[in-house]
Amino acid sequence: MPLNNRLKELRAARGLNQQELGSLVGASRQTVSLIERGDYNPSVTLALRIARVFEKPLEEVFYLTEEETL
Image 1 (cartoon, rainbow, N blue to C red):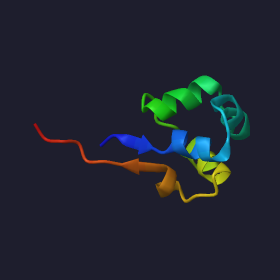
Image 2 (tube, rainbow, N blue to C red):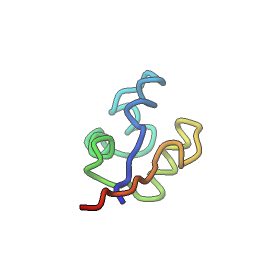
Image 3 (cartoon, rainbow, N blue to C red):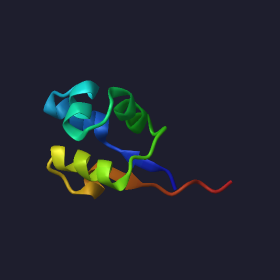
Image 4 (cartoon, rainbow, N blue to C red):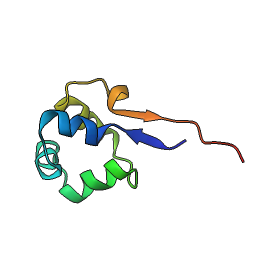
């Protein structure tokens, strides 16, 4: 099951760019970009830090979707 996220949407609502979010959570801009694109799954610690920035429960920032069966 792929891990999806609402990072880009939440960042835009807060007026943050990737660099600013990265600074707030202790990650690089590149890491934030990779997470947003779904190319990297954050550690639990990083995911919790991100959710805290947006004052959202973890499940409102990151969520799983079922893979389609072939």
